[in-house]
Image 1 (cartoon, rainbow, N blue to C red):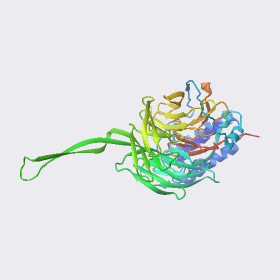
Image 2 (image 1 turned 135 degrees about the vertical axis):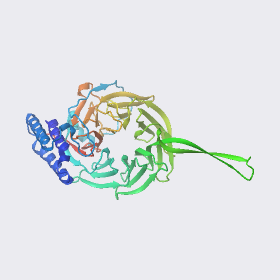
Image 3 (image 1 turned 120 degrees about the vertical axis):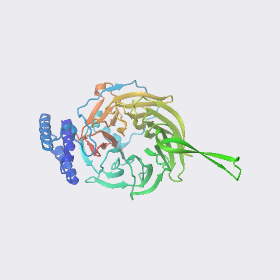
Image 4 (image 1 turned 120 degrees about the horizontal axis):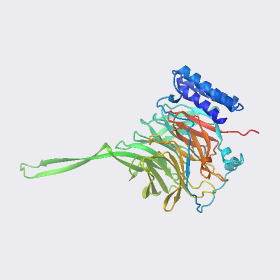
Length: 485
């Protein structure tokens, strides 16, 4: 029944842009009220009635607005999707390494006590709130560290927004304006007092999250496209940024003579590097925001994703050519040293990287979670020899320009099973059990509230809320289903 309820809400969201085109506030109020009514009065209805209601409402909306169901566009770009698309799974063998168990927190124990199965733990079906302040794709979401309420959203409309999702009602705190191109990355500092953002305009901005002012702006002499950014987890003076330069060298020779004798001729050759399309060089740069000192390392391709381990000693970087590289980071001087470069496959842009020390009692080894544009989400075990594939989940993801992202669920599972969540191009959000031996049962939940490719996903630290964003700029905050007493 809950899946049909989400399909009804998805249908309303798809057609919402056609209502009162000159009154966006009314559209926002309408979709919020629809969500409230569906949630309050639809929980006890028979699924057969829901399906009949969905069929009739779809027909009436199509007759009213004259637009077919599969061609609805919320704002700008249309994305033909199929909400009933399926997902298949492939698995690899599992092994365990020795690593100590982290401390069990009170929050995780409370969550564990709520239900007996992993499916019940991740039964996110209710819509807590909807934000639509952006007018282009929201490519990344990130909750503040150890904070249940504050959420950062970055968008291709060149703005950054900070929302508080736990006020009554949830509210938009601010919209940060300073970039002139699509914002490509963001990260909170350890104490959440600073926020760093990067953009294709070649600018790094550091924002004070209390005053909402830009306190530092760094722009390269050559205006390169910045593709992602990250604070160092231990020393927030260091910011790691990936960018793309196009070099073409040209030589100019100048001849001249001194005095009246033409036999004395001097020639000087100048070599200029011009920014041109055709010879791309992807680089990772470490910037000390206190001193302005920069250090760079070449990788190649468009570096779309970055991730540190918890100690900040190893940096992982993935590009659009299917290569993932690891670097050793010297925290004393901020220098990167290349370790390994691993090829994961052709036509496989790596759009997201997540590092985790361990996932569950069945996987107590460091792991990497990757999204690749070869229709897959992959879980790798990090070993001394490199990466070892543990799971390969197939989702719809074919375009390297669709920055599909995934996330480990923040609270570790102390029973059999562990969960990841990912977006997809079929407008759905998938919850996947990485330890499920039955491949057909690995999918434990599927959310269908979006009407365009789902790009960003982010949990708050205690898993009470999940945020998802799509290519049309819609941000949905999901809440866990409550068990009937």
